[in-house]
Image (tube, helix red, strand yellow):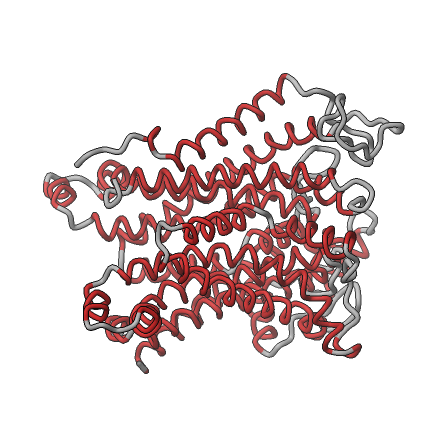
Length: 273
Length: 316
């Protein structure tokens, strides 16, 4: 079978380029932003794009470009940790469920069905009622919403792999359940799980923005794209640019990550490779 | 079919029990002392003790859970601390906003996505397909609340056709109420439609490659008949799966759009309850919404059995 070269895959290359730009922007914001993202200026409020403020300023006179750059870091951090929170327990539940079978499988899958009833917004509402709103609540709520997808995918892989010759052979050689799962089944289940993680990342970024918008995620004055849109809402007629740039940043980032996920799926799927 | 339905009903019941457990654990167990949480830092220890007693928080957790579950099964979700009204009654008063919003968005999603997906599949790798996929990709990338804001900017701020938010209720007339829900429904449905377009296109494309479709074409059947009578019926299972999952997401998405358009629905009820530390309301709304999503998923499962006899035979 001929292997496809990643760089010749247009969707993958475009997605990877946008994602790299996002990561570079987030990294750069750690050492450089055109202005302090938290510095206010009473005289320079709600300005449109100018030479000194290419994305304009917000209602506190803060530089929108600097806040958009710092917001990229928030999105990446929440996205990565949320996907990790979803992938870890999700994969574990799926592996155990598929491998054990029977009543354990049935019970775990009903639990997974129940977790599916809690989209990120709903989990965040619940957690915020009990804990203070903020980034940790966002990460956990979004991560929980990802658990069912990872669990189902891992379970499906285990069901497919557990009767394959190499697993049967390893069992015949005296391999224990944990060793079979971790050394033989898990590595062979990874490609679809990696694709799932990539496709979950943009969903996490959208969810983080929505939670920040509702006041359940990142709290002021720290920059988050969703929070910036919430603040921009009251000034739509005065300065629409204030809403355009953070919204555009979310859209472009999610578009790039979706392209990357689609490209990766094509490249890793043996049917299309 | 009866055995298939019976098995699914048992699974639904078990899932709903897990849903209730998850809500109970987060609201009653994780905070340690819910009474202290409700009172905040201002409450005296005596007042917290009285509240603990009034809410029955001194009893064992298992007893508290079973009593709460038994109440929920009778429709009694407790009493709101903020409004001093039954939580169930509060939810019922907010449903006439959230439910029509989700249904309008679902209607928009299906009406836009299914024909567009079929069009893209039947025009595979031609201009129309690329345009449909581009629109879908953009739809997936734009957050619902941002499309809501852009719609307000265009239709309310710039054109002045509709107001930017608020809801006068159905008593003010069907048309004014629908007008208030139209923009949020479009913003909500657009994102979900973008996902469904891709699923429809992919499902129809898969079926169009099947031998029986080729045979139907070879028999000389007109293209439309092949697509609608032969291909679409068999592509329905993946389409129904995705549409069903999207319905659950619509209920959750409605919570966000209610905030953008200042609609007094379930989401705003829960958000206000958080500000007022009204735990019974948050608990009731979470249980209600999560149960609705689980029941929608159950209905999708049943639909599989109706659409594809192989599934119900295998399952039973």
